[in-house]
Length: 134
Image (cartoon, rainbow, N blue to C red; front, side, top):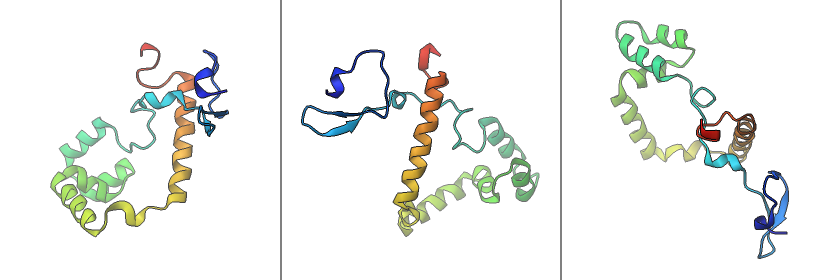
């Protein structure tokens, strides 16, 4: 049985199937075509409204107080309030070798697996952006 002979309506994301060339592959997840809604995206620390509030209060309230109020680092507050410092930081990081010097394949693999499972869970609930005409 190949990936193309699957009956319509049957969704088995972890089922191993043989392709026409004989390779065994897992069926692709359907959720990869949809984006996460911002309220469900666990990678986002601050909403757009919170970022705007930080920009408005940057320089009026200390960075440490803003950071503790929003439960983020002082560095993130600094990057939001002064985008030039963020650009400079990205440039200096690229000169040092980018984020590859901190990259661990095994840790990244585990994180991606968790993220895919979370996204699959939201897909089954119908909570992804653009799904079911939403």
